[in-house]
Image 1 (cartoon, rainbow, N blue to C red):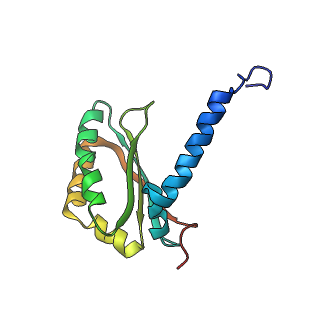
Image 2 (cartoon, helix red, strand yellow):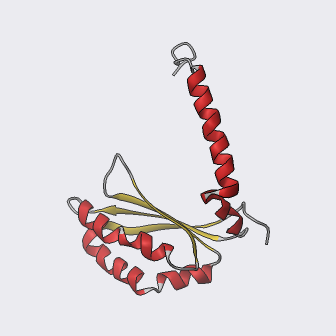
Length: 141
């Protein structure tokens, strides 16, 4: 959008943004964001993607949703998010953080993870694509 066609941002919008920024800053110190300090520098992070076969979107979603509570209850898991593409239902992205690869490997050995993977040949188009990442920002050591 060009500068001349961009809508003007009014004072109420700017005030709302300022409040949101202040709330976010406070949450980082007192609320949910306080957990960032528990993520060690160099932590083992996973970004994974799975797509449902045509017509299997609801089944893959139903098989995948229980993972959220199960993985988050694992004391070795630091962060776990399951996301679904709003524009392409059945396209899921996982974001996971573990302190190290051994913790991630132990996670993958859990029966509920193995059971989920066993369902994928019927439900997923092409299996799971995984990127193994390293956290670059976090608490030192």
